[in-house]
Length: 195
Length: 329
Image (cartoon, rainbow over all chains, first blue to last red; front, side, top):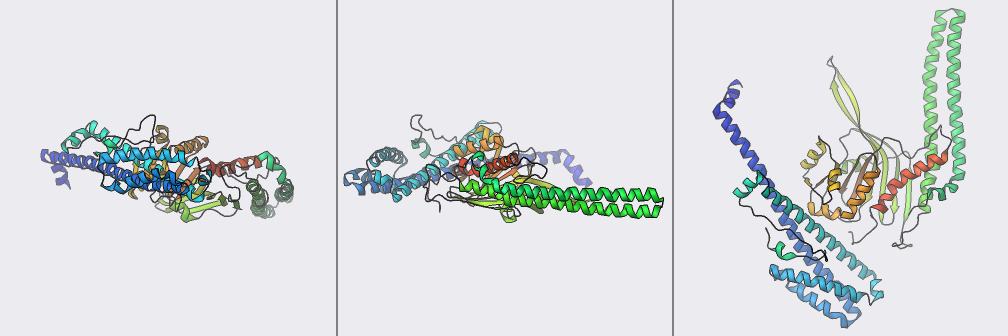
């Protein structure tokens, strides 16, 4: 025991202790960066999944409206077109599709106002509930994405984590920015570019 | 919405009369016991002085001493019986009247809305449920009473008073093993069906300087996240196994409601969300939902009990647990 203590207090021992401490700090910071990056990616994938689910839900809603009046089928047709190609779209196309879906949703809401019996229908109410739930999940994913990106970027800006961040070549990620006048709208372009 | 206390108080008239009789009988028993104790002590001391005989006086004092214990025990039992009787008659009637007169909210279907309640003064929430909550401190023994369960709209709920005791064995200065009991929680455990379906676990724990709970939750796989609300982050440490789900559960609206509830309560509040249920542990020093033997103003006592009930029943309305905006599986 005495010899170990003596060794640790010697210049060589002190250097070894310093190296071990630096390695532990390095590992902790690295793991923190990786954990935040993974959580950000997970939130991003969830956003994509919920956007797809929202397309499905909106298509069903549009179908319910169209089944009431064939003249109202244009919204359903357009949503179905977008949905069928969504998986193969580029990120920019997804941005465009999501924004278009938002406009179609508003048109759909206006159409539904003309059919009070549809608004009172149990199946329609259930579909509305599903849509609202998906939108809540979408919102939660966006909030998670932003919170993790904020932490990740803060670590890249703060000392001493910025040193490790630069060494590991991590790049800052962009946050979601909802438009003031239309907070439900999604500016996906920046997000879909990824970190 | 629950009726006001003033509107249901007249309905409690008959049971209050019965409770008054029960109180008078209990008081009579207690005063009789005190009187017997005093007489026995007077006889023992008087006989000792008058006879001058130490052995007679000593024996009588010993008898008076034993009798004191017996009659104090009988008095405590009488008081306990009164409290139980009061709970069974008055408190049960109060809670049933509250539910019988509940007003169906405007956005609910009157035919489908269900309001039912069960009150069992001798029962408490089960140990498994308390452990499952994940926010209960480590405990070895549990005491509890005043179990209430029911349904309000689409939400089932249950709560009761509980007291958790941790037993530790310590060695004294002579090296003898000594059992030390420590109360680690006293208050209300409230469980309600949450209005959203989720699979992960989310905990809102009190921010303490030395926080063993945080490490225990970390050990279970939870990590800390920060919510958007700064005041909320100051009040609670949010730990979760899934940060997206935690934000899905904790909408801005719910965070606001939780803060309102916490600000109203003077004591510590901790919450957890597990298995699509919401658990609340609300620390409280006083005993809720029971009558007072030496208090003749039943209206005041009952109003206090009514307000205590409302604190918990209103959670369902305030946290909008009936707002089934999605199809919960």
